[in-house]
Length: 128
Image (tube, rainbow, N blue to C red; front, side, top):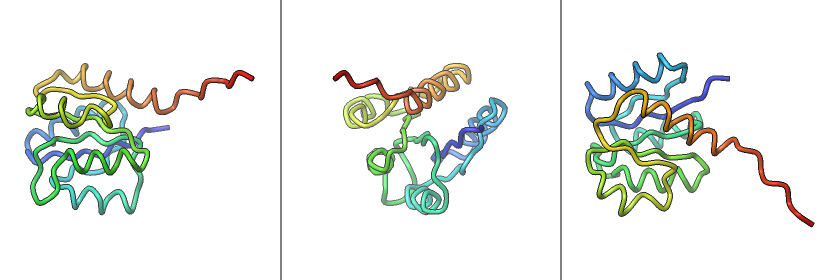
């Protein structure tokens, strides 16, 4: 089964490059979208398996707020950002992973697989 990734990135050229890499790796994409409101609207129609989010977005909703909201809905969040320090300070509690721009496509794909694997890991058997 193809895993569906919501891509939220306001740099059009970078978003296109990331989208091509994700599709080549076999992921299905929602987006890319450049703003938080667009991302919320898209998530109302389809639920992604994971959200890949930049912190600096167009519009009133930034990536940290978007990531918090999606995480609360049970959607794993990976931040891919040039503002890594901010992601570390404000996003590490709810994000599955943090990546600094630029990163290699291999590092990105491995991180997404790891975050998705953690979501799909079977629950530990209860002792008792």
